[in-house]
Length: 330
Image (cartoon, rainbow, N blue to C red):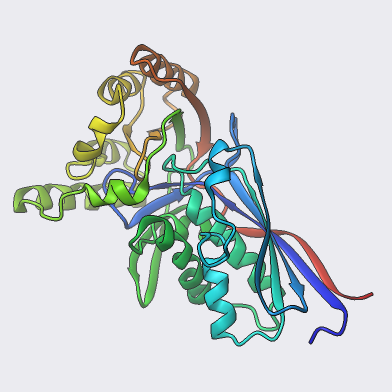
């Protein structure tokens, strides 16, 4: 029992760009709130309470889809991992959770992972013994799995760690931070469309021709090598999705025109973020981000789709504590 003592912490986790064209389910990078037209992070407040269990008491945000989010802790992506953690750790106290969503849901920006990561990081801060990094990853991944139907860490890992991350394996936990050229940025365009992640994954082909596998493997290796060498030309030549993008592009009106407009405006590469419909365009100092954004928005408009654009560095921060309260006697 807590004997009338309380402790609380609030963590923030960033939105993410998953897959990064060449690394389906294994590559992702975090975004920052820079030049943002929409919120790019989720905040979760976790408080120790006497009543055992996980109690989801509040979900707030501007996203119209929030009303559809479940308030059952076992069914909500933010708290599903905490429920299992409380069981595994045999907690004799409870966790009261408040979620403040700034990342829009069903847009391909890792909305499920951001709240799951923020919740786990905040909860870890109020435990008697903080969770290890592999444990934090494991419990946050439960929330992501709840949304997607399958475990994949390309949103959870960059949301937790920040920067560009390669998820080499999930069990055992094995991730690699990939250096990003210092002047790299991403123009991110969010069309007013919603995508069901489970349905989007279910529609992907489970077979891949050997020729396509070889070509995509070469692109992945080229992109990662280009990042380590700071070789912009190699990155540009490699940043092409030959596997997933062709299957998902038809679900995004105007995709081909938007991608072409961004490349003509100076982007190094353009692809779909996660399951979509959000698109991202990588660029360096040689390109004007405003011109890329304008070109992409105009192309979407011509396709009859409203969209919003923002810009972020590629090497954004990962999840961290922004507010912490000590155990207090009333």
